[in-house]
Image (cartoon, rainbow, N blue to C red; front, side, top):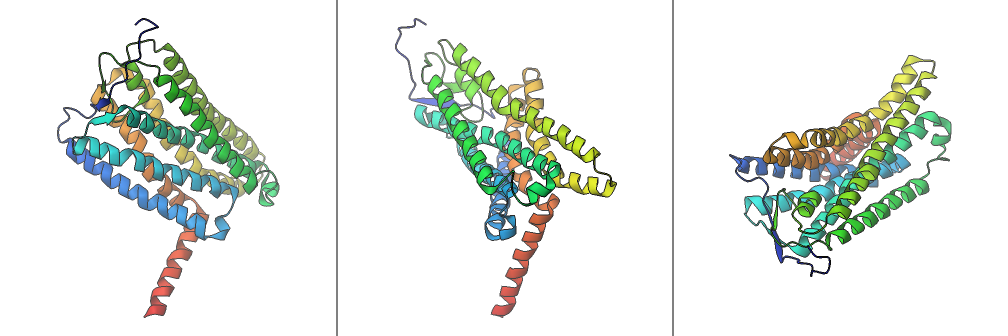
Length: 317
């Protein structure tokens, strides 16, 4: 295209994902069940943290933020996917598509950054246990500030990414080969120069996904070194157990993404779309279960709340 040509912005895009897949309605039903579970589970975790004063710690500020991200992310994604494909509303306006893309990637990036915050909290807790107990290094104010900084950064870089999309022209196709307004499928169908979008996308993947993963791995190397200095094996296991929930969250978040990036070119489009949709939806339902089952403080808080409910029912009778 000539650089002086008027940018062509279509009135709408067509979302074409999940096409020609047998019995796909059962998959939509599965997504709906996972979404409902995610709403309940993350809602319970957020409610427990709000109600229990013992959970007003820096660690649980980050856990609350993660639960909010999971709840909001699934709420932004799953109902729209079901409406698009189950009820055959595959048309989405240009502005709505960019808005949808923006919020989806803000949540995706924030989940990655939040896992890095949790690993930092665990590093401080194990490396400086006495200072952590009196909340010198990681205070509530510090964690609030870090979470706020991550939100500002994620919003800022996604505004740039969306801004670059607005310079693209769509003069041939408006069909997006994905299950939502995904960035690369949307960029790929443009008919003018997409190199700035491609460069920015790779830069953001490196900064937002891989840099936090490297940071998490480095923190666990430091944690391993700190644990090696602990004389008693029982104390080492106790300290390591405090990291188990976070390690599982990191694995659930990053492993499917790594697999998707590794085999992306070698699998059919529909298989990749299902894989990526599961990658987006399942962690949000599994994360709260992991924290309830693996974290002693959350289990204690849940028991206290259930005990209060039981006592209130007895009092009413």
